[in-house]
Image (cartoon, rainbow, N blue to C red; front, side):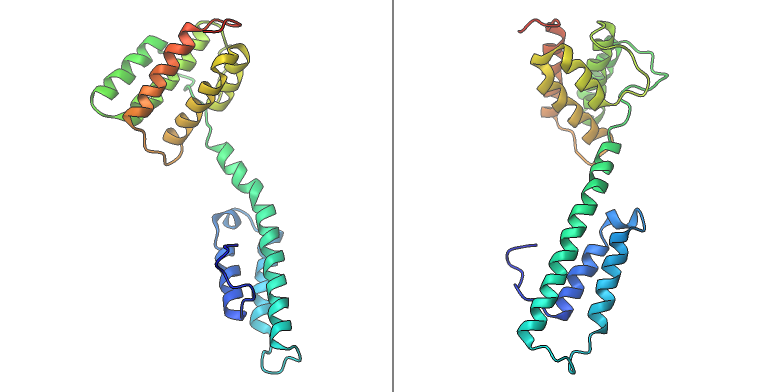
Length: 207
C-alpha cells in the first residue's frame, strides 16, 4: 500500500481498495480462492450495521485496517505467480519453424528495416540473426520452438562472456515482439554490437 494512504480507513475507503484490487487482470484470468476472498471482504464491509455496532470508532477502524492488510497481502502473494506466468508466456519462439533464412539474410532484412526507420523490425530481425548465427556455428543446436530466453541461456553456457548481452538482447526481443516496448535506433545499435561481439567470440575464448 502507498505510504500516503490513511492508516485507519473508513468503510468506503476499504471497499474502494478491495474493489480496485479485484479489478486487476490477474483475477480475471481465473476464478480463484483469492477472488472469492475479496468478494467476501466486500460483502462483509457492505453488511456491517455501522450505527448499531458496539465497537468504538478506533476499534472498528483497526479491524477494517487488519482485514484490508491481510487480504491485500494474500492478493500480492497469490497474484505474483500469475504475473510471472504471464511474463514467461511472452517469450515465444524466436525463429519460426518454416523460416529457412540464413543469418546473413536476416541481417540484410534488419539493415533494410533500419534504413527506413522501422526499428521494431530491425531489432527483431537482428536478434533472430544472432540466434541463427549461433546455430550455424553449432554454438547451440537448432531446436524448434526455442524461445529468445532459452536461446540466450543455452548460448550463454557456451559463451559466458556474452551471457549478459544475450540476456539483454532476449529481453529486448521479447519486449518488442510480444510486449509493448517501442524499439529505437539505440536498440538496433545495441543489437548490432551484440551480433558483432557474439560473432567474434569462440567457445571458451574471451575477447
